[in-house]
Picture 1 (cartoon, one colour):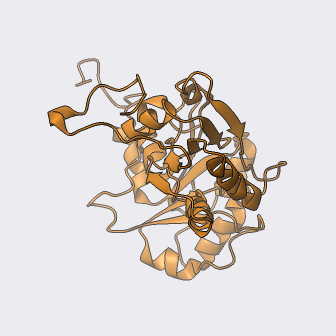
Picture 2 (picture 1 turned 90 degrees about the vertical axis):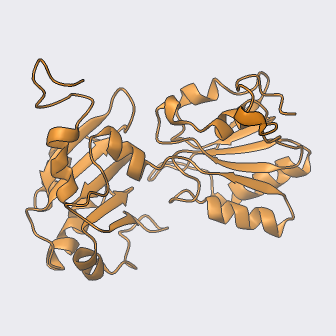
Length: 277
């Protein structure tokens, strides 16, 4: 039985919640920020883990659900700032598991969406450490939803492309075929793209994307301090620089951005006094 006191019994007599066993590592997504977007499996893990190795993007409020006495290890990687090496983080997970700890590797968003969870899982498997994956809500979906932007809409797009805004060296992602992305995807969602937004926008325009394509930049997505900048592809670099917005941010390019006019549920723009709230 799980020793988590945070969860009710599973419905329908489905059995007990999964137990985080000594020597195991659970690779877990914490969602984009709002604690309410945490999954029940993640909450269960927080109530059991002896050690929680967490990223910088995990909302500190979520860590308040950790089991009393749990060890908290910060292992965030932030662009341009002193950060733990990924290889060291992965080997730390191995070391903790071999010491018999119940280890929770807690990541912002989803562990397999630009979260290096796949790399950590490979290292764990290579060292014969058992692990479980707990998906989380990715900022590229949940963060945009909090800004009133659906990543798909039948009237606008039949495809969405998720890309990273930099490669492993921090440079613009040179391995991406921007021409193919510009032509083939109605909506483009960019993670970690603030630093290189001007060059990315230029590459997309050069590949044929309209300079007037709507762009939204969402910072502190799902949190009380969330801000949204709406601009165009041609103006994105200048407008981001002038806005004072800081990373981390999620960037969306495409016609679905214009749907914020009616789907911005946090401010209810365009609703009359008798509007359906």
